[in-house]
Image (cartoon, rainbow over all chains, first blue to last red; front, side):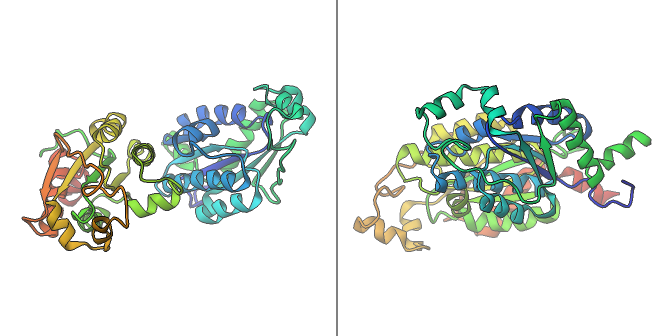
Length: 191
Length: 191
């Protein structure tokens, strides 16, 4: 990274995708704290916030899941274009909808595939949802009774069964630095 | 307005409320052009954009109308808090939902009551909707078969049957200047 990099002052969307329990929220929360110091303007759109404020009433059908992802994308795009660093944490299981958001946001869309084997996610079972999914109490559960389409070319691929959340978060922030989004702050520090 | 005013660099939400045909969109489009020059970061959330991107599937029941208004408010608040000038143009007929958004956004919420007698709006009938509302072809039409609750204390009350859109838009921008949101630009010009 050097000063010729031209993304200073631009917003971005960090889009964390992956199975429930893969570690999206854990990592994104660490990243959020770092970015509040290093970047300033940060907005977090995680699954719960979005289901409450934008997507109440939507089901887990493919169509409604896609609608949910596109709504998050619409809001993330507005913020990104206005210089905000957006952190999205959403299972977002379907490639087509994710790619539609990527197309909308353009270069400032940074897809982070938070990856762990299904068995690892199910063992963690942070919210007790896998138990209910395997017993059939919850239907259309991604990875169990509903598909998850893995990203073909994410900007970052994180294996959370092989490294600690702190380490994963560090790699996300480093990627933002490499891409030049944080260099403005670096210059401030130098001055 | 003087330099002691402390809203420089802050975002705001201009919330245009009023009957269909009152002139919300006409005025807000003029204001948008002015603000793109004077303020820079501007986002327009008008009824159609929102119905497509955030609220597809919502009906015109009171509950769904309120949900629509609160969703717009959620997005407007995120943008406002991050220094963006937001222009909302939505009938938003119910006081309680508008006040909820006002509470969420705080001082940076600027409510503009775009007012014209029902007969004037119906005569204009820009989209041919009043004809259908009076014939019963469209149900739950604000002002005809559904209530519009007028703002008790809007920051600006515009009578579009008594002045031209250009004049109304000028008053909106002047109000923003009085409130100090545009003074940063004024200072640039002075320098």
